[in-house]
Image (cartoon, rainbow, N blue to C red; front, side):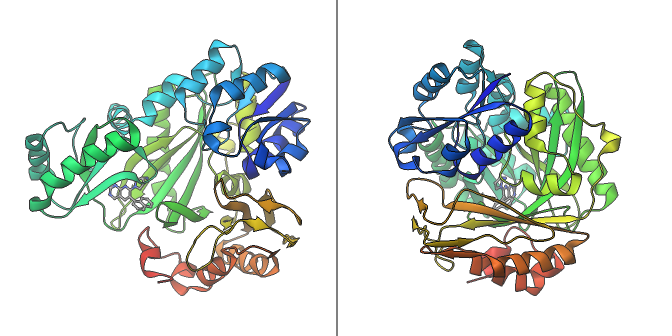
Length: 444
Ligand code: MV4
């Protein structure tokens, strides 16, 4: 592997360029006409304009991305997260053209991207799941039969959904038929696949996810958990590692379940197994994300392992750079996603940054894509930076986060920094006693 084309933009493209540079690899950035002055295009060794602003005409257009690969002579592609990162067809095309796709095999992206398939694999791996349908629920009768078995509240989920899209909670039998029909219609419209399944609804869960790493030589490891319970409309806002509610025994059980699943599949590369943890300490498998995640940073901070370099080395055919017993979770790390948005309405707030100052000092990491004079475009996700702080324990980590948020300066656009400052001042949050519904009450 000599030259990596990063099929992405923003902070993750910058992150991948940094990892490639440390590994002595050349980098090619692709950018839309709108992203001509973007940081990733400036930092890469080469950069190629592949189309106009709208993602479907640039970052999502496979022929344009592959042309850039061709023109630049790249022999590898890193998809990052979002965009084409979980597009099995794109991974397959890379393989067909003998381009090293830095990620899982197309077959795994496809299988694990289907929630029903993923549940069937989890069942084979003896991974705990909420009671529910074993496969796709096709008719009203089947839906009523399942509901009779598992009771209410239940949740109807689209097999091709994910990240909170395509879910319907049903609390009483009178609503089941109509919600089931609606779920199928919306799944077909939203994902081109009407298949739905049903499982018992967990009212106030925590979102716990396990970072998996697997190489091409049959070595599997997990790097502990991340707690992503602070979400708003399925947009994660704050993530942390380790989880404030984790015990070594529970970590062992969840980690072993995630490894069993990866082994059953024969998984390679980075992956994240998502679980719900309910109030009586039971955990249930949700889905597998077959990509590097936005919040991979907090795991890097508490394990000292560079996950993006690890992922690239795995794609080069190397063995894991550590053994499972060398993995130690040290300290506590937290990430706040800094978005160009209004701090109370959360409406995106693109525009020119007239002044910019990043926090620094002990235990502060900034993974960002902006600079003074940069204009945040309106066509893409509103996240402009990830502020990550690390301390010996959660208390010091939060102290540093509060200090860093106060230091950060972004003039010319609105950001959600004030939202994070309010959150870090909230007593419930400070105690770590929050679940995924927390934000529905907080900050009303
Ligand atoms: C659930 C659930 C409650 N019960 N499944 C959201 C996205 C995907 N990870 C699955 N999700 C959920 N599935 C059952 N059976 C609640 C959620 C959920 C959620 C999960 C974790 C973190 C934040 C969430 C926000 C809303 C819903």
